[in-house]
Image (cartoon, rainbow, N blue to C red):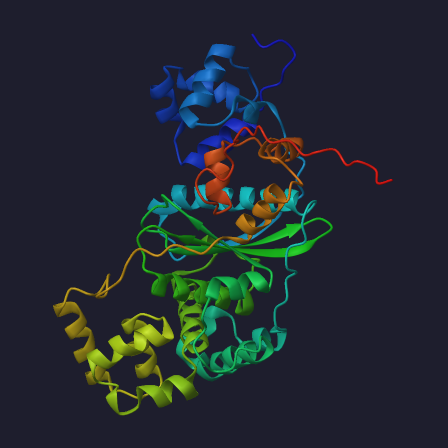
Length: 399
């Protein structure tokens, strides 16, 4: 047995959630009975060292993960996902937990760097104008959402031209944007509201990167911004009816469309060529939005008729471009705000990789370096320790 060292059963349950693995799968992989694992998870027994090593190895967590509580103050609200499907619940629970750990890593780094503070337009008056989602359909909110998109552009001094770097825009206003790899292919993007004691509210937007083109990732970011600005975070996806959920999603899509493609400038540019597929292809390079999103926007603005829209979509389908338009490549985010902070700390000599990892450990955060890099959107091997034979010269007092 393990002497006086305490194994935390809650940490075993957390590790299973994090990996999206069932207790039965762990039992089969480790040859530890499901009954024994259940006792460990409920603190009714503790594993032998051998069994703990088996568990840690299969779940790919440091052994210390199961032996320590963290001291972070992160408290989470609802997470906005794109689907309510029960079959995806396990994947959603995994991503929610990963978001919490991203927030915990962020909280630790706050002791060393000043991240941009959250600065969002006051949208309380718009929220009061938006009825409960079950009492109205999203289309009745067109005028309100159009005005909201213009207000955000005005207060963020964006004008009415295409937005060059959506990720940087959000990060500069205190919204954390990270890209998660190996996410369930049914999950697009999701966002979460975090409360950190002594710091306040932080919003995190997580994007499923690795296959979607950048044009769609930009729309996902704008969609999640819509949720942040328009919707309340008290309810969970499970408490919403299908109609309520779909209305919220439709509102977020309408905001993203109005924000990325302002009616005045985009509407003027689309002009007489709004029924030409090749013209959308040319505009895509300027507005950095998918052709299909621009077609939907042209239809919303009544620049094209329903028949014209249907004809354009049939052309898209005939060319096999519904999921991947011509020229699309898998999109990757620019360096995350975490990358910038950690580069400053490491390259400036304020911390070493070892001391940075120790800082996380002091908070009780024990994860593999690979997991940390993924959760913070870091370049691979950012946290790899490279031995150095170069030493700083001691300062010699001047005479």
